[in-house]
Image (tube, rainbow, N blue to C red; front, side, top):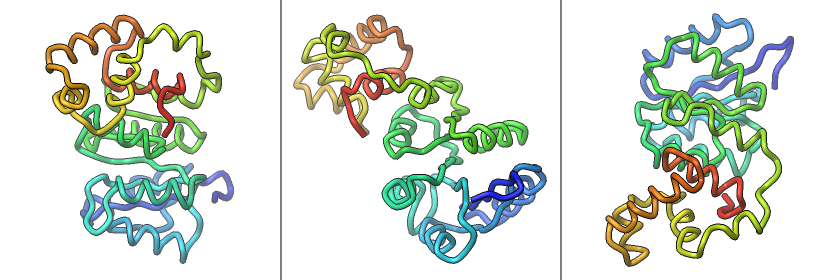
Length: 220
């Protein structure tokens, strides 16, 4: 996976100019070496079968044939030891929750500074989580740093409706769709959300998802 303290990387992006520029940048970092490039998830699969095994796969979220979501799902099933770092222009909470569910180790906006890319690669290579979304910071590292789940007694402070809402908040549903699923008005759902923000001391939907994962309310 790595030699001489250099971590191998597969880089996947269908924009050739951007991909080549990223490869040159990454190869300028002492700790990393791009061993293969790909234009989509199918080419990532081919690279895994024919070249050096990577420690990290850095890939675009939006790719033809097999996109970042589908490729991350396949990697989670077949190569769970390979760390995945996603590059994207999308930073919505639902996108981040989907990526968390797929076990990715990092989520980076494409407009980051090169120094942040290197920091992210170093963190992911060390087995940590890295997210450049300023709404969440590095909150996902809590998943790795806290092995103990909350006890059933602690979860008992949540009623059945709150637990149902938390489970749905970890899905791809919008708040309006959650309201329909729970047979409530959007205003009632907003009230439940805001009450849980205060009760659980979180500030975003991602914070709710992290709490639900750590507490064992949802299992991905």
